Length: 117
Image (tube, rainbow, N blue to C red; front, side, top):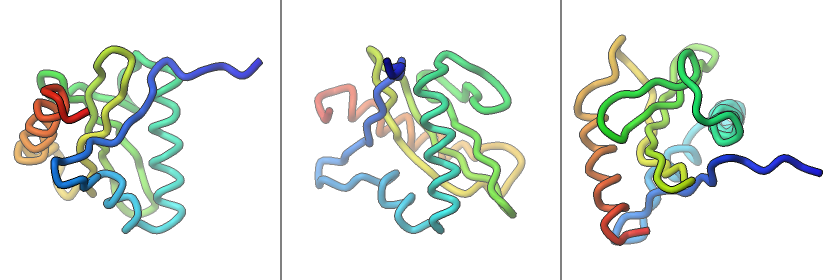
């Protein structure tokens, strides 16, 4: 019997219907999308986990850390009632995750939590 994931992943969706993480993934190369998707799936099945694959950033926001061939991707998410909400994705350009990226994920999480599910 197939093992079920501990978390169901969903894309954050804005009021306008945009799904920023899905859109970001579509703009990446196929091999990069595959690597990020595999890391997200790993988190779904192994939650709760920590470094090196996952790190807690602030409040409800966590990051999936994906090493690509020549760059680093981060997928920011929150967990609520068995749901992994994919809030924001970006290619990391600095050593620390920029506060603006965390703030954007927190804003989206609050919107999602308050009825935009």
